Image 1 (cartoon, one colour):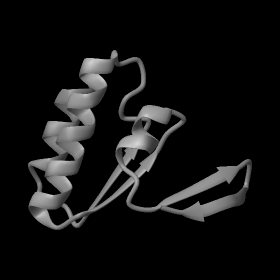
Image 2 (cartoon, one colour):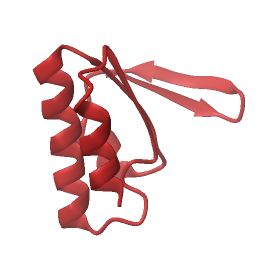
Image 3 (cartoon, helix red, strand yellow):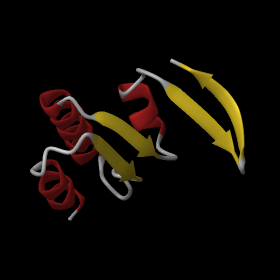
Length: 79
């Protein structure tokens, strides 16, 4: 279901792609596919990709820039 939602969202060629836990409940193979789809889609249409996640696999795969929040506070900012 997540992959279908991702595919539908990127068809509109948005300027910003917001994804809230896009890999929740996905196994490693599906997670890698979803991350790849998000990355290719953002690059293909020149969109900024913003992801909210607790998944370390996503944070490791998309290291361009990260903001780590703890509660309502920003804890760390960096690549």
